[in-house]
Length: 341
Image (cartoon, rainbow, N blue to C red; front, side, top):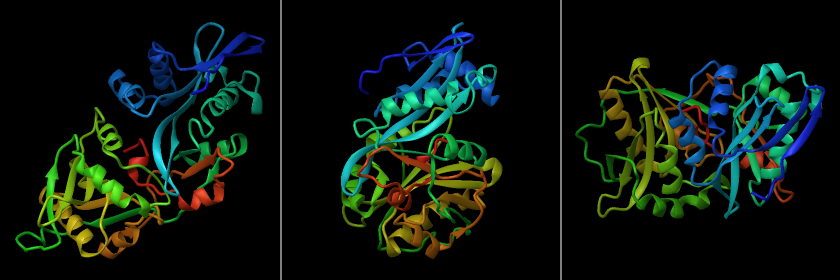
C-alpha cells in the first residue's frame, strides 16, 4: 500500500478520522461486527481471515470523535492470473457501519461512502489490486451500483447440484488414475498442477499451495481434499476440495481443478462414492459458466438451479487496461472465491 495519511472529516459532532487498520483495532472491529450482523466472530477467525492472509491486509476504518468505530470497508487480497500475467485482486467482505452514525453528513458524502473512497484510493490501483469483486445480496448490490460504481458479473446458472449415487464405482478398475483422500497442508505437486493448468483460465485466482493452504485453514470449518494422481508415477492430475455437512445430508464442492474427459469423471466419481458412503444425498457447487470444468460438471450429471443465498456476483475494475465488461465475462470463480463457505 502507498503511504496513506489519515483523513479528517468535519461534522456537527466533531471530526471523524478515516485511516487503514492498525494493530489493536481488532476489538473495535469485532464489536461492530456483532452489533451490525448479530453474530459473534472470534479473534482466531478474524486473525485467519485478515492478519494471516499471506497476500496482505486491506482494511479501511472510520472512527467517530468519541473513539467509536463508525464504519469499515475491507477486502481480502489474493494473486490472480490475468491473460497469462500475475496481478492482485481483492474480494470485498464485511462492509459495515454503526447505525448511530449512518445519518452523519448523509447521502453520497456520508461517513461510509467516504470510508469506501479512502479504501479505493489506498487499494484500488495496479500497485495494490486491479479488480475488486464480491458476492453481496441484492440490496447491498443496488446501493453499491448507485454509490460505488459496482458492476454486475451477469452469469446465470453458476449454482450446480446433483444427487449422489450409491457407491457405483467401488471395486471397478480404472486406468485414468488413482483417487486419494489427502490432508492439509498440500504438497508442492499442487504447484506443478497449477503451472500446467493456469493458462486454461483467462482471469482466475491462482491455485497455488500458498493460497490453498491458507484459504482452507479456516479455524471453524473442516475440509477434505481429494486428488487424482496418474496410475504410473505420482503426477497430480486434479483435485477437489469438499465441505461435508452431515446434519443437512449434503456436501459442497468448494473448489476444483479437474482434468477433462474420463479422468475428470474418475475424480468426481471417487469423491461421490466416498460421500455417498457417509450418507451424503446431494452435492452442490459454484462454477462460473466460463470455468474450464463447467461443461464437464454438466456432462457428469450436475444441473443448474437457483442460487440459494441470493448473492449477486459483483465487480469493479481499477486498471485502465482492464475493461470491466471483459473482466465480468472472463473472471472465473468457485465457492473458494467467497468467504461464505
